[in-house]
Image (cartoon, rainbow, N blue to C red; front, side, top):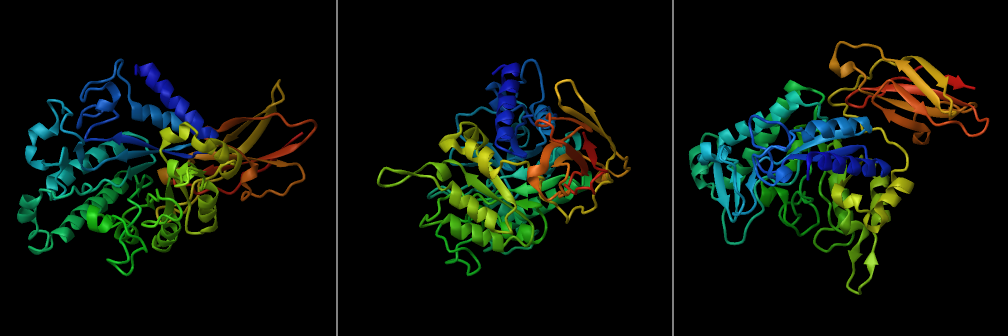
Length: 460
């Protein structure tokens, strides 16, 4: 696509997401040791122009653009990085100045793919540098990893990290027969150090992971889930449970991409298991749209499990929301899912869950709420934001509520939310007939702590 075409493409997607009530967009900015943003560390992604290292023309910054467009729509932007993957097929070409040519000892071939060696300390250092650069320069709301840690295993082929294991396992405190524990420790160190790095730069930037949907199977570990599937712990060397328990990640999004009743990995079993093993942290459910609304059965019929899955999410107090996979698929509206979300499940705006382990102090209330009747009958609202020295105490956005003149103010009632706004003004829709409304505005900080309501304003 040309630059204008790609920008319009992204805007169209975001407008569709807004209709569906989406309030967070997870945007992949580093698919393969490359960049969907201006970087002096890694090359332009081939997914922009078709050629790795080739800048778009005219030059623009997709990440900066998406941050601005998301924030304008009241959405967060979570920057999604892949920590280890470099090439997914042997036909791909790396650009001449890729790190692969400068430091070939950091990379390992596996099947037709190439990965950073997770066991080499310099690999971790490079990844930390890349992500620290983005956190420093961009106003992202979170850093996000998915399920790609050590690669999914290939049949009859061992991941070729024996040299690193021999060089570092004793230094790391592991014995000769503890390679799997050593591998898990390599990923643990990256996750722990990345969380520390992010918080040192910007304490309000969250760190979330979307792991494969099974931690361990009960047949292997009595504390695991009643499933028979590949597991994070044993095959991908990712001990998600440890990361959540230690507070190394701020939210967890297990990819529960199976159907209810799946014999190897039942959605119902897994949502219960994760809700009981998330140690009070934020838990969102990764929902596969296709395997929810368009399930082809053996008799040729199609089943839609959206209602049942949403019921399990809504009724479980330990689950705080959903992440829909994928955004592109959502935009195609399979099974009428956008209609279901916009009319039913996500009909009303939702404030994002709190991250009280990072910050629990709300910003100061807004002041001087004013209203002006406009020619078309709409109501122009404006308010004053109280200053704060600490970034954590500043108002990042605002929530505009509208109540009927005789109604009690109830900020727990989402049906009264008119707008989640980034600016200190909003044009409210015209009242119906002679209806009178009173308006209330709250200030919300970067970690979603909501202020006390400012003084209500009755508009006659």
